[in-house]
Image (cartoon, rainbow, N blue to C red):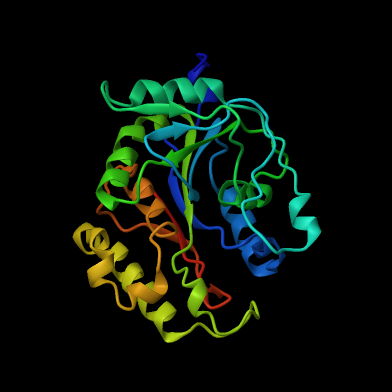
Length: 266
């Protein structure tokens, strides 16, 4: 990355795990207000690195480093959701740093035409609506918590260079088991129970519990019939200065009965 005066580079950036839900989450005034306030409290990043639930590709893959169209990776929504724009600058220098941090011999791929998916751009349209900060998205090479935690450890030095590392998913994501599509519907027991377990495990720094969420998380098969929306959390924890320290919760509550719990680590 191009050298800058030390005074212009933020102090060590936090790393975030945030719930992006569906494209319709931008219509939830509570979530928008909380996310906007959270972003305002953060140091302004030089650039943003996103790992989203919606891009699993092996090996680790680097997305577009120049402006390209967004990826509308959802179906059956009203037309306006397919007209969303987020014309952020490309981040070729950040991509170079990611390549440098990946250990020699570890496979790496390029996807120069792959734009941001809604796991990336939906929260960014709220957090940084001016779209002036360079953004890079990289894939999850697989859904293994330990592998993603290790990826977070590899990427952690970027935090000292003004990079905001963001894992984007949803703390519960049992779409097949939703009983009501009313955004204000009460959370079902399986969503509440898993959310409470995750919050407690995070507060206690119990990485072993979290790594084994499939077997130890209550109602995990309902909360996460697929792991993709939970496991970006491990990139965030891996990027933490102390992965066992309790994170700072920024957003709680439910949308469609699914947990919006989001947090930052120092």
